[in-house]
Amino acid sequence: MSSRGKIRTPDGRVVDVVGKEWQYGRWWSKKIDQFNRELYSFRNPMPVEKGGETREHHFKRIVSALWPEDGPKPFVWHPWAERMLEASCANQYLAVAGCASSGKTDFFAVWAIVNFISAPYDTMVLVTSTTLKDSRKRIWGSIRDYWQAAPPLPGKLVDSM
Image 1 (cartoon, rainbow, N blue to C red):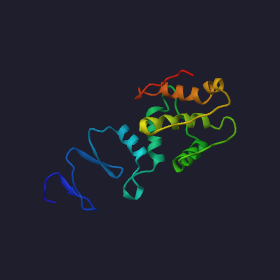
Image 2: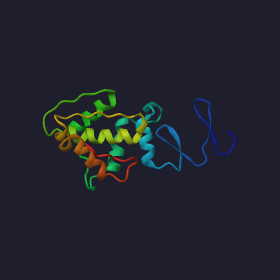
Image 3: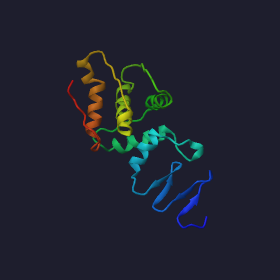
Image 4: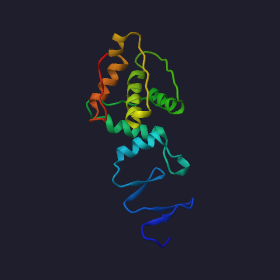
């Protein structure tokens, strides 16, 4: 193509690429930081065959940015967390049962937060526990702890139970 800063894509579209870069099967403005690219791509994944990555890939990158290994509350990956991630990405609705100390609470606290911050107007997360009082020690307590340990996030966590 002869026009400067423009290219023709395989599907025939003409794209102005000045100030843009190609990543995850999309052209991105260079003004969009990596964290927001990961959030958008987690919510709107491009198929791998078109240059994208899996939702699992984007989720792990988001989690690593928010709760790094050297942070105040790191998220620790283990085989059960990997299985919960795969199942969560594959299913719109999911119920999980498992033994105590299998990481369900921490994984789904992080899953809830990442889903919320990637699309706050399109996300509803329902969590349950045995009693309201117990939820503060379990899932709600974990959501609160991860929220507070993350860098400042959009929105406000209202802890009024």
